[in-house]
Image 1 (cartoon, rainbow, N blue to C red):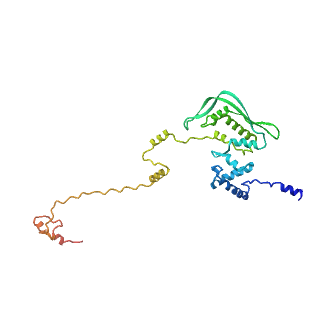
Image 2: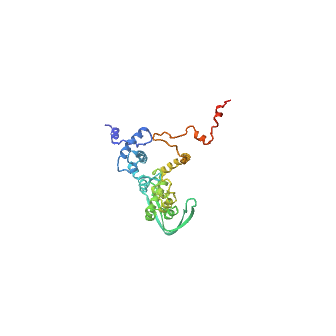
Image 3: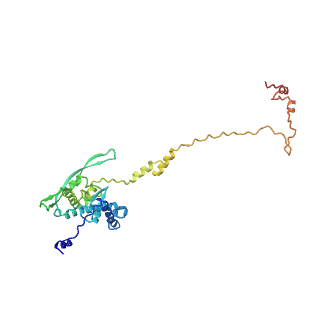
Length: 316
């Protein structure tokens, strides 16, 4: 065995990272890998099952480009308001393990109690107005820094402070962590600013999850009890409830209405006061003057005229 053959055997084969979207063959290979990932219950729910194969493929592609295990991407990639973002602790870990800098360090300066002002919009929609609110906080500044290994230069990121959090509207947001754990939030935000400035390719240009939560405009759409009661009172009693019921009611209203038929006149019949001629038990008229002789004898006028006129009738 020659020296070159021994070196070839001792050198492990170079593994080519799969770029899922580079070719059909790599796409098929990526699907086989993702099938194993989506069937595991160790990955987050948004990656479990065949229905989330697309999410797993994207996570696999990002992991290959960053050179980290796919499970690490899945555990630290959050989607907030449709925007993918990294967990803040992952940002610090990625910067410390990228090999470009020394471990990230933080410098904090306490500035004491200060009065800070910020602006907010108040009032109902359509007639909102801006007002300035002043608040007193214990201001602290935090700066992330590290030494660049290639040059030995100390790199410092943008300074973050409590006053900045108040002015930007992060501090007084509902359920804000800036009030309960300001030191941790300062370091998380300072590290994110450092990474976005000096190593955006490490983070793929994506912000941290805490940044997205502070910037995103969340609206509370839970109806208040007073609003529900007012809407219930304002609705007419016969109004259809629900979308389908309203559509059905609209269709019924659009149908042409049938014209009401005129009611038939009611005629009240009166019994004749003239007595009927007498009949026998077999229904035969008794003593009925069929020819009207009795009437003529009594002097009644013949309505059809004299008989002689009938005999002299001339059609011409």
